[in-house]
Amino acid sequence: MKFIDELEKYNALDYETFFRKVTDHDIMHILNKPSINRLDYLALLSPRAENHLEVIARRANQDTVRNFGQVMQLFTPMYIANYCMNQCVYCGFNHENTLKRVKLSMEEIKAEGKLIAKTGLKHVLILTGESQIHSSLDYILEAVEKLKEFFTSISIEIYSLQEPEYKRAVKAGVDGMTMFQEVYDAEVYKELHLAGPKSDYAFRLDAPERACKAGMRVVNIGALLGLNDWRKEAFLTGVHADYLQRKYSDVEIAVSTPRMRPSVGGFPPRVLVEDINIVQYITAYRIFMPRSGITLSSRESVNLRNHLTYLGVTKMSAGVTTAVGGHSKGEEVSQFDISDSRSVREMSAMLYSEGYQPIYKDWQALF
Amino acid sequence: MNDKLVIGNQELQSRLFLGTGKFSSNKIMPSAITAAKAQVVTVALRRADQAYPEENILNFIPKGCILMPNTSGARTAEEAVRIARMSRTLGCGDWIKIEVISDNRYLLPDNQETIKATQILAAEGFVVLPYMSPDIMSAKCLVEAGAAAVMPLGAPIGSNRGLQTKELIRILIEEIELPIIVDAGIGRPSEAAEAMEMGAAAVLVNTAVATAKDPVAMAGAFELAVRAGRQAYLAGLGRVLDCNASASSPLTGFLHA
Image 1 (cartoon, each protein chain N blue to C red):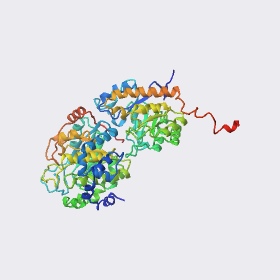
Image 2 (image 1 turned 60 degrees about the vertical axis):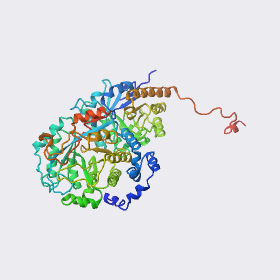
Image 3 (image 1 turned 90 degrees about the horizontal axis):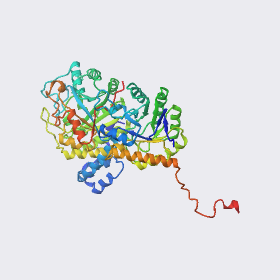
Image 4 (image 1 turned 135 degrees about the vertical axis):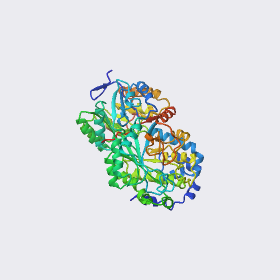
């Protein structure tokens, strides 16, 4: 069975009716359970649960501290190419957008790596646009080889691969993969992904599972908030994470909660997702999946990121640029604008002042 | 009275081992370790970063402590073995706590892989302390494999649920010749005392100290509890059998009729 079959079970779910039936009593009952099921999680995502956000947040805080301690892992993304064959209407790298397309040489990649390593960070996430021609797997894995000198853990956020290709990546030293489905609703997906390999919904949906089968240590999934009803997308992301974690218990399944940011192309979010919604999503997910990682990007504001430190997040980006070669060459055209531009030092200082220890190294790849 | 715990040719005065993974700052660790009077401290090797001394967790362990690196993050025996060897190369000594977890839902250890790793590393001269689910047959295999102690869990890591596996641990204490060290699950000093009263050789605590409101004070509280529990064990707990219930002997009276 694949996840697409699991997802089908929820096609007939009438969210509106479900939410309407959730009572205050239900919420309190769920919060007192030692572990909660998928529909409990959905109840915690309901509009009704908003009234209980402080209690939900307290439970999320306790669950996080018990399972992870008062620590926050830091990492930074490194964009190495922005060529893209897709037409995702909301993305700055959209094939149709006029922007300077670049691809870093191996020398430039090393220079980027060296600069990031100076901050002390040992975890890096390599990103490319989706072009198998301009950023082939060979090119990406050559970059991985060059970056091993500087980092003990290397993850990739690139186009969907076949299982043997993920195996090659694992063998080459990649230990984490990030793959956002963007939208779990297949109809909305179709409307937003007009052309290119990414327009194949099912192939993308199955990518995290292929990575799990290939032996990836960490698989990070997510829906891009702002493209569809966030409660539904948050629920299905949770179901996806739960499905993967049950089936591949040796893989660390993590989620991100990216929210749409302004980018070249200027596509406005279809749905407004407020800070309170992000808080509800993260805290509910934490209670549902108490040992799962939650990654928070620099798309969010300084103020929100500071507060979310307590509420379930376990991994944050720091010293971020979303432009190709942005660490060594300065900002050029980025995939999207970031809100929190704090350096690794500044993020660490904030975490210490909030009673959290920044973790620069949380894994040592075993080559 | 001489009540020393001997593991790997080391005589230990302290029966409280401390974990280091969850402190809000490495800087709190030395005072917590001192307050706990802990001699054995476990550190996840995955976090050690000698290239970055300011944040390197190893630099915050007081001199004189026995470092017990752990293989946290290992999913198989092979990965645990590689981490242990890396630890030795880094100069972290011969002690190793084996932690093999391929279950990310509950963080429960994989006993089979743990036994395999113990076999390999004990043969290489490591002092091996395996973390395990309390199961008598697995514990016997660990003894065979050359473990220096056996570390059963009281409850899942970080759960602070106490001695949920009490009966199984009691059996290990009775049946296994090696020191039994209760690792994981202990959420409060009274639970540490309870484990010691049962005859556990030591306890390992992390979450309960590191995430306390005042970790240093809590480390001190655990130190007292572990000593009290040990003393109670040695003193021999009072009788619980009710000997004065009845003057007559309904079950054996017939023998004297």
